[in-house]
Image 1 (cartoon, rainbow, N blue to C red):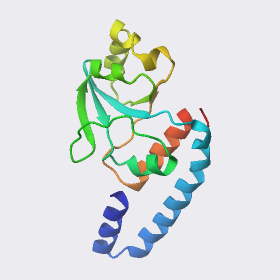
Image 2 (tube, one colour; image 1 turned 180 degrees about the horizontal axis):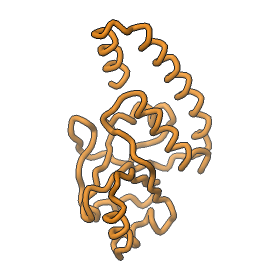
Image 3 (cartoon, one colour; image 1 turned 180 degrees about the vertical axis):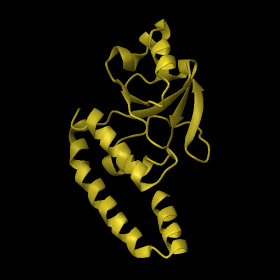
Image 4 (cartoon, rainbow, N blue to C red; image 1 turned 90 degrees about the vertical axis):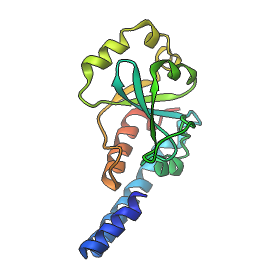
Length: 164
């Protein structure tokens, strides 16, 4: 989807050559990062961001990053319904069902709420927290395009690259 949107915008602005150059760089970058995830294994990835101390936004199969997850052989842990953008809001307690997933939470300037949540017994009881598979990561624009996807891949590599 991001690729198609970029091409359409480039056509509208008569910048097709610049778009082609960028997409070639994008393709090289995505391919260059794939080896970092080969030994990761089949553990699914749950992508979240905190809405408030009781709710998370989860990113599902229709999200901007799904194409890269597919390319790298990473299963998106969220298989429930999503909106047009590939996300949905869920209560924190619903995350308890993700016993085997790696979980990342994109920060968005909400450290006070996140710290409050992380101090609760409910959060401490989460299987992915107890197993050390929860990671707070820098913000990424979920509704962006190729540059957002590249930023996501860098973050993912920093957190999960090469880990089984």
